[in-house]
Length: 468
Image (cartoon, rainbow, N blue to C red; front, side, top):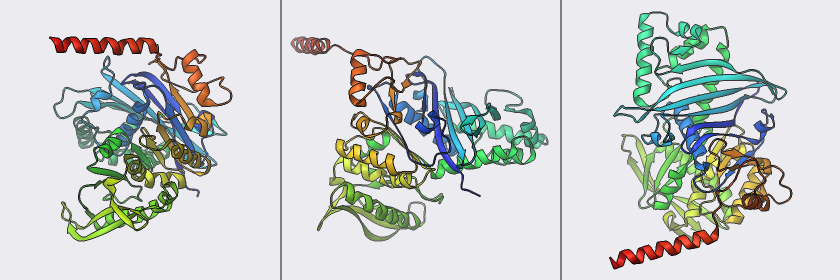
């Protein structure tokens, strides 16, 4: 039996921040090649505040929910100001080179009056389509959860009936529902609902095996192959006190996915985590020395120490090594720390088809030429998926134009691929900004003379306020 891969196909948003509606598709999914196990890259470009980061944040919330984790307390900020709800549908291909399915996970957040959480998951759906020769079947519902519905809040009815055999089961399921809403977690992927859903998969003939497969594969994928590096990651590095080190591991639940390395003092981690960090640093060094001439990392041990939760641990520090000189990692540039922090998961993405890395502002602090080279190599030789946002336009000259999506000024249609652009895509994009020619406007263009006038007027107002 061949190993089944999990690949991101698309993300569709509604009433999500400033995106009334928008959909992005990964390059292979866009051309209905779902079974590919080679590298896929998708870059999202556009002006500030046009919805690039929104895609990364939506994927971050999807990962939270698939992992059974509560939404962040500021998740209400992701809902458009003129709406009480925001929704996201993420589609994944699950299968091998011969066959598979496209599983869609849909969730809707709603503003809450609860003091404990500002939002809750009001609705969830799991649906799927079979894939055959690049063609998709009609969408079939696996499970539909409605938190605000009284009585039977799960459909189809036959699935709900398989879960609830008696009054006690019904009470326990209702408690699981209440806990999910109160805690801001997914119901479908919660630990409380898991035994009921397993029962439903086992005892229903219709699509029971598909439901079991989807739940199992998406849960495993969220834990081991789905990595999101958001703006908080970069912001933490910019502050300079700690550095998040993104780790790809093999299922040890005690190993943190994003380990915070102190840059001002040695870190203390459990021995199992420390062993994994050493192995990760060894892997990182193979790539780092090629990207940044003669640079390596060294792990300096300070001896054993009990962790805050009572486990045997190790106190250690990661140093930057150039030739015979060792310096604290905090002394390196922000760009180098950003690269080091994500190199481990980029290595995983390069080597494994079931790894997705979604990075906001991938270019932050990274030399333009190096950024282009990294993306070109990942696209040409890698096996996993990379989705990134950037302001640096060099990748437009380095990667396939089908691997690029651009934001528009239309909130009802936020993301498009350019059409009719021949030759250099970078030049074509800039030309489209200035003179148009695309099906949507790409940039809210401001006249340079108006910008200069605004600066002059602001300066005069400042001077007048000082006189007062």
